[in-house]
Image 1 (cartoon, one colour):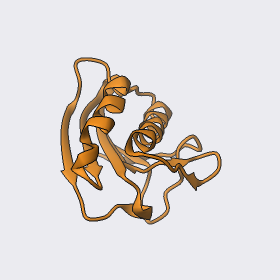
Image 2 (image 1 turned 135 degrees about the vertical axis):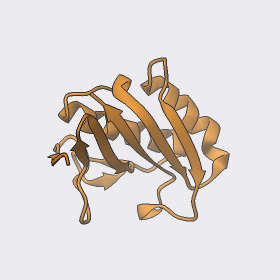
Image 3 (image 1 turned 90 degrees about the horizontal axis):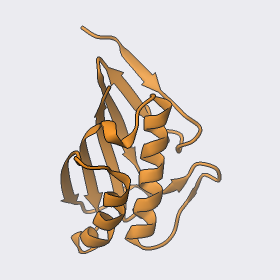
Length: 127
């Protein structure tokens, strides 16, 4: 059995509940879902889905960097959409953060996200 190691950084929003920003399990890093909160202010980034996705992915990148990884180390991403109508706008931002070859990905429309944001993204990365 492998011991869990917690990853925390002030460069991404602090956990607002009983969870960690990310957890190492062996060579896999499981990153909790990020929403568009500016870690410097603690405030929600307002705007359209593309604007929110940019902040979300900036937060994901910060968690990965705290673990010594990059976006290129991501092997799986899950994107939660408030509306699949935002798929194309989020996809364009998403593509700008992930170098080829891109990770596996799922996209799911959900009834509601924390703080009523438009997008949340969680990732799994491998060292």
